[in-house]
Amino acid sequence: FFFGSVLQYKMAKDPGHCDDLNAELLEAAKEGNAVRIQELLDAGAEACYQEEVKGSSVLMHAANSGNQEAVSLLLNAGAPWNALDRYGR
Image (cartoon, rainbow, N blue to C red; front, side):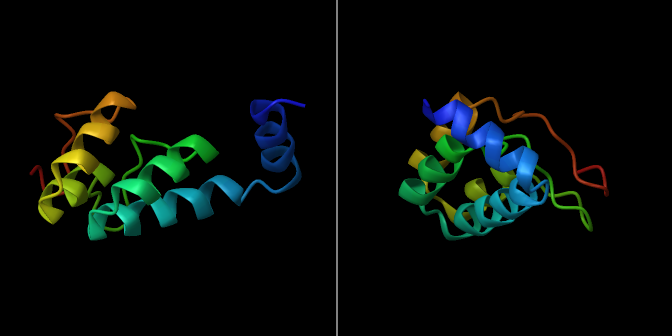
């Protein structure tokens, strides 16, 4: 197996796996934890994830943390730089 196969197997076995990864990614972004962000992206978390209630993106939280490396990681992973939250911000 290569990593992608293992991840696909886990996702098929546990559909909530991605939700858990995305929730962890959101927390890592809030903390500006670039190392953890990279680990979660490598594990299959979605750089374009937005929280359900307010619609804030992972990138928005990383930017608010002030960690430039965290922001760069997310942008390089495909996070939309122009995403809007539910309030149009």
